[in-house]
Length: 385
Length: 236
Image 1 (cartoon, rainbow over the protein chains, first blue to last red):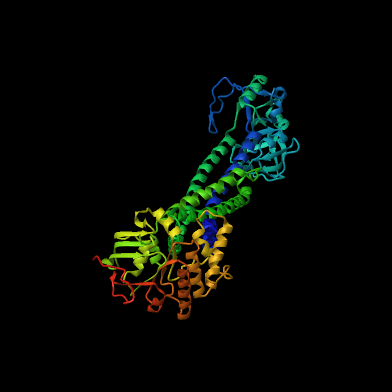
Image 2: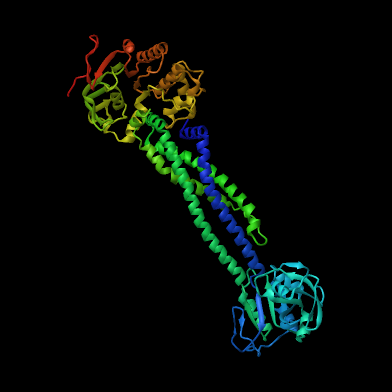
């Protein structure tokens, strides 16, 4: 028989109160765990994407003029001095020192064509590399498999009345619509996309490309090094790194983290209030018992220890169950929130942290009730009997 | 020096309605070791207040309380708690057993904060449970025991620490006549083994068990039985 025996016996006896205490803390801890593990998993997913596509590099023809394009608005006719990139030069990219980091080279040729009475932007691509670089593209139908097939962007298809299997004349040449690109919210929606040779032929740009996107698997190599290496290999090209997409996602995750932190603090505060109110009620209810303990010679510190021992026991249980619940919630939500490959991260640090957090919150919220119990005048407590 | 030495004890508190109540009006009391003292009187006479002060539970307004040479109210709160644990055994009117602990665990309560081996605590508790005739009832919860058995558990709990002084507040107050007689006989037996006991009761049938009787009325000495020695003088 010691204080621990008394604490455990009391908790066993007051099962409903203990369940309420555990639930109050459990919800708080589970919320924190779910938010943190979700953020961690989503961050890892974003980092994975950054590794896969982060060092996306854009190669455009070098121009002596300043750019006259901003936010999708181009002052037409003022970039006439732009040079084309020769297609045969692209093989040089494969010889740069960091060539092993290159996942895909996606050349494109761009130009305006006429379909009926409308003028449309035609883009010629290498389907295999293009669809690898544009992982987010989604098709109704299939990719173009030959030089007389094309894929229509959602807005272009709507404007031209195209469906999968439709035929159309592009600058007098027959094409079949192999697939429709679902809305991307980008300029891709306005395009007709065909194979690189077909577009080069129609646009009279044989052997040249308008721009090249390079997808590099580059988690550790400096992007700037690769840019320099490609610039050296392609003196006629302007090479720049684009990481905005993933950077934006990481920025969004940072904001999500901050939001999560705010929510976690609020939920934990509510959990702490539940513990505080319940422990205060418990202390009031146990006036008689505390009076007996004091009359039998328990010091104030013994009463504080007894109440805190109960709080810590409940908190440990709540921390453990809260961790499991939080991870369960993450497991359920992750497939809905993650846009690509993601997996649940079982972190021992998070498990330990959730136990520690539960104990700290439980003990802090129980400290005043414990102190109040210890200050109870034993004669008053016994008079209440 | 007497084992219990009380001088000019006064206790005033604010009662219901906000008016001042003089529970004790200046009492002197000396009790020798090994005495079975009965404090009698009607409700509100101050007998429970006197017991609370003697038990270190309630600070007096004025006066001095010495037990075994220790000035109780010169001690700080924690030392006073230690004093209660080491020197006193309490038996309350309504048993005051902890409902979620077994009889044996209730008896072991005063030992819970003592640094001693668990087996020794258990052995000591079983011994006193045997002493009050409940050696085979240790595993029962209070709710599974009769009123008399609960009172015996309360007495066993008060004795487990081998305290020099046993304080009992109406220990037979909620018991039937036959069980009351058994409990009084048990207390008398303990007293004959050398235990000093101070017991508050309003039941005059118990007076035959006491070595001495103190009768209080309105916080002052009332007339006592001719065969008892006057133990209190009124300073008020």
